[in-house]
Image (cartoon, rainbow, N blue to C red; front, top):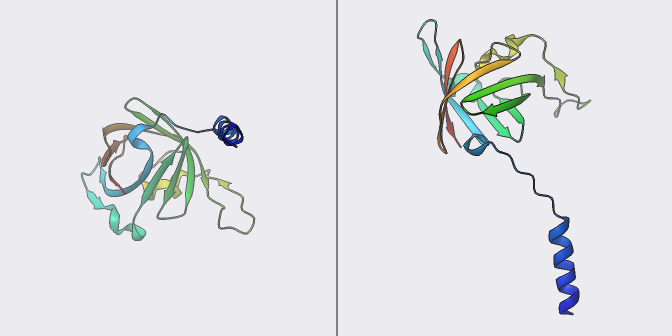
Length: 143
C-alpha cells in the first residue's frame, strides 16, 4: 500500500507544471490613486474616476479596469515598463472575441496615450508603485 501511495505521489508531483514570472512586486492588482499631468501640473484623484481605475499584472498580461475593460501585453525590464498590443476585452461579449484597439484615445483614462507606451518605474515595492511617461505620473497602491 505504501508503494502505491508513494508511486501516486511521485507521479502527481512530477506531472505538475508551475508557471512563474519574473515580475516580482509588479504582479498583482493595483488601484490607481492619482494621475498627474506633467505638462500642466494638475493632479487628479483617480479613485473617483468611474469607480476607480485598476491595473492587474500577471505573467505578460495587463488588465485595465475602470472604463472599458482592456487587456494589453507588457514588458518589465529593470526600471522600464512597456505597455503594448491593447485589446478591448470580449470576455463579457456574446462572441467572446477581443477587439484590437487602433486609437489610443480609449486608453487615455488609464494614463496611456500611445498604443505602445513606455513608463519609467519611479517606485515599486510590495505596497506602492509610481510610473512616469512623457505625459503623466501615475501613483498606485496595491490591493
